[in-house]
Length: 409
Ligand code: AMP
Ligand code: MG
Image 1: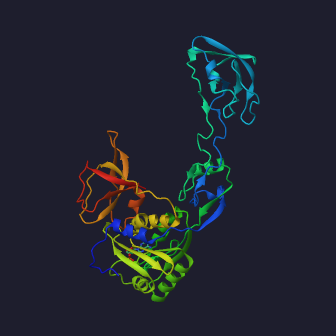
Image 2: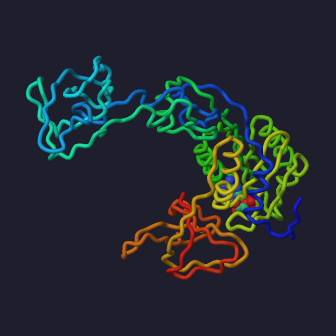
Image 3: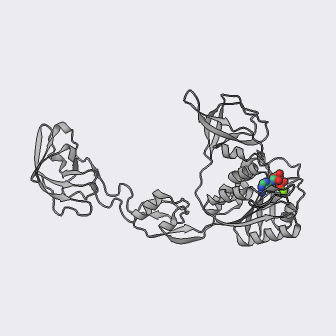
């Protein structure tokens, strides 16, 4: 166990240790394409066909041979039939001939060019004329077989979260079912004698539990299975039972409260006894205390009790860790340099996640502004804000007009 006097651990070091220890799940299941929405792909998707599967028209117009187009003046071609989407023209187009064609319809054999109907002058259904004044180009308006996806091409990789475009791609390849990662199960609860559940009467010295609702919401966005174990009181036997129950049911256990140095409750004591857990003091603000480790076979994250600290540590540590365990492809946090419109106070030593509001300045420039009171108990700052202003450990404050980095929510 880390002593209260131990040096602060950098955010990067803690994250690296978490990623080192957690091995992504290999458990998978087969689901239908619609059931795969928002799930994590477990297999490489290889295209078994060309998409589109044949050369087809990008326009409503006339299919013909590019070499028939006039360099000067006008040419008139014989109309020999039509090609509709789903009902292709059966014959072959020869020099001097043209076929009426619709968008998505198969390009008839022999033809290599489609002229849009706005640049054609038909004479009944017998002939059609084209003028060099319209600047036609041989080969135009043809969509080629395999232009989107080619037979044998790997088009999606394991770890991809399947959204609208991916479901469309998978369906257009003709797959009815695919392999996705099994959902991770997560049990969560709040600890503390002072806590009262929303909807109940507040006693003297009590506060409402907000962390269970923020944690629930942030977990819900990850597509995991949730087990809400409520509030656990500061009693040795209750806490021990709660941790053991949670670990038996879930792949990950997340709690808030009771992990700060000098806490009077039994959370740390119990965790020390039950599991293999690091109690870290992280060089970040808000959210200095963070517990990470294992209780039996379940991963454990003990978030700090203060509501903003709980959210920030969840977003910076638990979320990437859960995504990693779930087998999701991950990118580094997306940070954007931007001018800060006001002065920000900060002491060097810890990486700070101040809450910020993105806005457009009078001169039209995109800027960020601090979201006011930054206390780790001011949950409203998370609601007002739409980004974190990320200030490095050694930063000692920001003057109005200086550049900073933001992480949009
Ligand atoms: P702790 O980490 O248990 O020492 O708690 C730190 C602060 O966060 C204290 O002011 C607690 O009352 C508060 N707190 C702990 N858990 C919650 C919770 N679930 N919801 C709201 N505030 C909490
Ligand atoms: Mg507590």
